[in-house]
Length: 159
Length: 134
Image: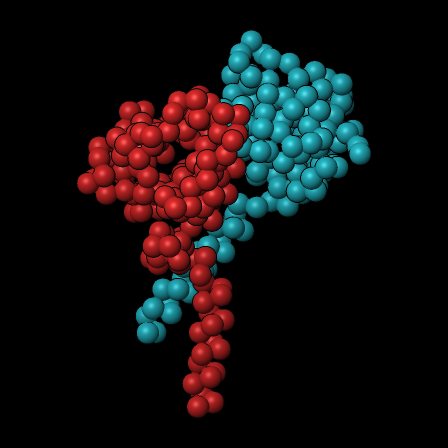
């Protein structure tokens, strides 16, 4: 019994130390079925925009985006090569399935057929509200956007 | 089981090594003196302010995202994301990691000026930011 407790404590300690490492390896699923966040992804990409959930784009789009970070939608978002490849590998490993559709125009999530379909009832003036401003501002209506949660019943469209 | 633990340990070590290689602790004053020593010139806060607030023949200035006087939160000019204050007196994390500082100077100077900033320009900007006090 005592031995079992010891093993349990040891395992718990090990897990506390290595949980972030597992995230890098992308081996485990997170709470909501999405991948465990990659700290580098949230830190680097998340400093300028919502760290978009990897499943929102197909692997081909992520590959192109990560290959052109020095001209990233009008800004220089370049990273160290090692960081670029670590983030790129994680994005591709957790990318959306091909069933969801081909790479959208300009690799923009907001140009995907499924995105346009899901938002077909949103009038254009709603997108332009100061509280929303642009379709890429997921968090304006989806409070769980940073964690990749987009359930319809959690949607709150701000005034 | 042992094999799994081994893999976990290797991943943890790899992560540790990555973190150690990417964070370079410094203070804003240290960075300022390092840049001005490299430039071989005395930094001028006023020149830093002018560089920061001016457009350099392109769409954006530094102020476009950080605000004219970066003592409060800024806003990313294309994504709208909130940016923490840049002046160290208003955010203690600013200019405390030389690798991060270099990364952002490299990218943002390229966006604003179409080239990298010189060490003298970096020193001027930091000198100005350090002069901003509550």
